[in-house]
Amino acid sequence: MSATELDRALHASVLKREAAKEAEFREARAKHEEEVRLGFGATDMSKQELKKIIDSDRRMYYRSEDLNDKLFIHYKGWKEIKNLEGWTGLKALYAECNAFDRISGLSQCRNLRSLFLQENCIHRIEGLECCPLLWNLNLSSNFIERIEGLSQLKSLNTLTIQKNKIGFAGVEDVVHLVDTTISTLDLQDNKIWDPDILPEVFTRMADLRVLYLKGNPCAKKIPNYRKGITAVCQNLKYLDDRPVFPEDRRAADAFNRGGLEEERAERRRIKEEENSKHERNMKAFQEMIESVRREKRERDAMRVEDKFTDTTDPVVTTEQRMQQQVDRWKEENAEDIKDDAREHAERCLQSEKEARIADSDGESNASGERNSKEECQEEVQAQQAGDGGNVDKRKLVYEVRVVSEQVFFLMGAIAQDAHEKRWRDLAPKKHLPRWLEC
Image (cartoon, rainbow, N blue to C red; front, side):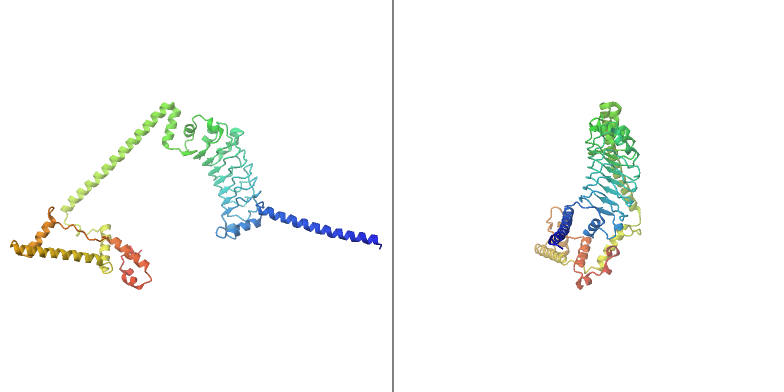
């Protein structure tokens, strides 16, 4: 082999090695660019990405896909809904703020109840035939021009489709709503310009209860917008920004019958009915009071002629039974609930009274007006009973507590210091009545 041929073979070998290095470099660069692109959120809705979502929050998601009933895939930047075959138990899908241009991949989600696809790039309502239980559908802020594809949704209750491009073709874009079971419809900020949508669509929706229509050109073209819609849609309960009350509906019907004068007359009648209803209620209340007082008088009169008193009556009421249980518990636990401070204050007061009685007794003996201690005590009692006498108005500096407060205080102390044996010995559970053991 000559030197020229050897040089050519060496040069070819070098080129081959350089080509391999270039291919390896390009492959590594493409892989790096793919990783960078995935890092910025431009990922694909793959099995691996869904597994990452499951692993990201173990408290919200189960490891098995079919056990999960919620899935949050918002703000992912994904372009297609797919790989949801294993999510058969899914009931709520939160997929807002992505780049979905069509509704797909929901063929196995037959238990889906709520679907949130607002702020995407959807142009058409489709792909919902396999979700017969769908209750809530949100398609706000998309590019939808026509309402369709809802005939299979027999349980659809709420449709939120505001800020789209619906209405360029007039009533034809929304006539499909007549055959649905929608109760809450939000069509705000669309392009609906035809005022015939009111008699041809809304009045024919038997289940319509809530309607949001402001922000459409037709709102300015419908005569007497709120009154007209209220009078025509008999089942409507809420329109735009406030509810529809029965008084508003009566006023709207009166306005349609005879104009403004008829509406004013109807409102006067409504006011008179409210006043008469208030008077009837007040009269019924007064009659109820009189009836109770009359029954009390009759009961008191019967009690006077009865041979039994309140204490000897064999018929025990619920209140009396409860009071007996409380009294019995107080007797059994007298030592536990004994109030030393009160007893000390009572003893001090009693000693002061006895000292005052003794002083009064000494003065009466000196003057010769009274000779016995009993007469002095009767005088002191008469003075205390009289209005003008020297009545002892001093009160114990002590907070009187009722039996229930003592009981709850004792139970709280037991619960707080349950680890100390002295509290268990103080008020064992067997001493508590049945209505306190729970």
